[in-house]
Amino acid sequence: MSGEKKTVLVVDDTPENIDLLSAVLNPYFKVKAAMNGALAIKIAQGKNKPDIILLDVMMPDLDGYEVCRRLKKDVSTAAIPVIFVTAKSEIEDEQKGFDLGAADYIAKPISPPIVVSRVKAQIALYDQARHLEALVAQRTEDLHHTRLEIIRRLGKAAEYKDNETGMHVIRMSYFSKFLAEKLDVSEEWIDLLHNAAPMHDVGKIGIPDSILLKPGRLDPQEWEIMQKHAQFGCEIIGDSDEPLLNMAREIALYHHEKWDGSGYPQGIKGEAIPLSARIVAITDVFDALTSERPYKKAWSEERAIALIESEAGKHFDPTLVPLFLECLEEIREIQTRFGDEIFAAHK
Image (cartoon, rainbow, N blue to C red; front, side, top):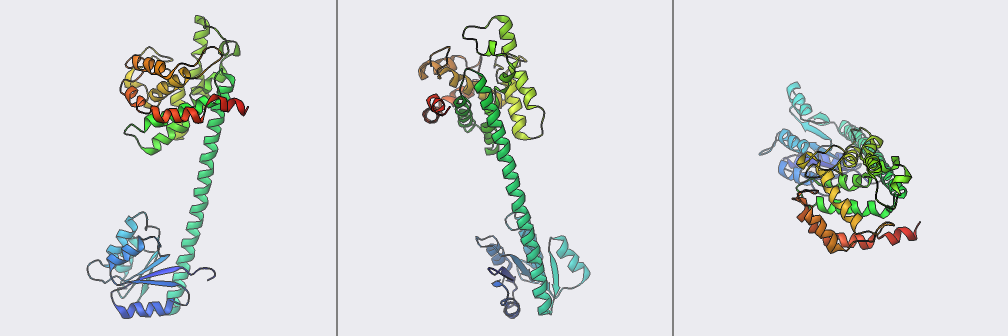
């Protein structure tokens, strides 16, 4: 075998058996030894895991079957191939070992060429499995990053068409992340929200420029058209089993709904509005208020906070508003880091 030697963990309560297997394997592998099942499990779970385990069956305290069962139950050791080396050679004994997840079964007294051949074969299979797993993981990560980049680009496309800037979607997505971290939700859900939030206004791509860029107040007919951007965003993102796109669609459709039911497009209220959209409703409005636009000056933080607080229980989820205010220190850092002047300098 070329390259660094693979590690074989030999587990047997009889020193002579360990010595014999070590003598057979040492020319080809690095050999570690354990004289009981508890030590074998500890070594297998350690930092430098063995590439394969040769496991005796008949041992005191934990027998080989129980050691194998525990190794296969632990996600950190489940993939390590186990070969039983034992005098128990009845068919039912072998079947029990394979049922527990063993890769092979070698009967005592051992044949050195068979031991070496079987170990090499199982390590080769294990190496191949690890290589394929690494390729799949890399490909999955590449696809994930590609999806994220598409979502970010679509989010920015909507902002380029609007009076807002590309920094708005970055800021509000961070604000959303900070608020979600105050809740009893998983890290995975927080990550989905952070990456889906920039798509909230993608439906504005479907709104005519004459309405979207109008500097003054919209008339009732124009406002009716403007409200359609929520449904347009939902349709642009479409139905998907992909969690990230599913949340992006949810946010796009519902982020203009209000806690008291006076929002759009469906007029739903309270907890019928998805949590993701209730979070984005606050973060989107806060960033819009505190940012300068061609049609308005930026509000002060104090004035924006006063409005957010006054709309708790009306526009916004009243349980989320105080949690949002707890994020102000982090929010200020993001406002400094991703200010609109940075966007303008890089256009």
